[in-house]
Length: 149
Image (cartoon, one colour):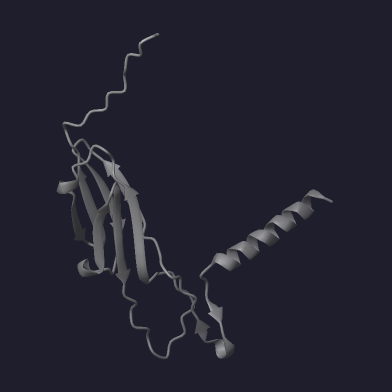
């Protein structure tokens, strides 16, 4: 077997994998489109911190405040919601669809040095910003003297 055969085989499996998991359009007879839609989607976001808090910034364009739920469960921060599909244009054939609709969820572990009762959330310009204030009195003492017996 030649090295090129391995590359051809790798490309074959990569193409099959991509086509199986892709949401690219499928065409029915008469060039009408049948859109495969996922059951759910995961919005993109960033997690960062400054000296006073951790911040979770999640991109949610087109999602209204009443379509989002932010809650804590144990040491988890859960963000759930639903993006309502836009009404499809009549007499149009869609050739490419990248935007997701339907339910979404995202989950993060809450750091130990957070004040859970002070967590806040704001939706502004299509971004959900969840602020987790730090507890200034929280310290981690990583050093411990071990007695030798």
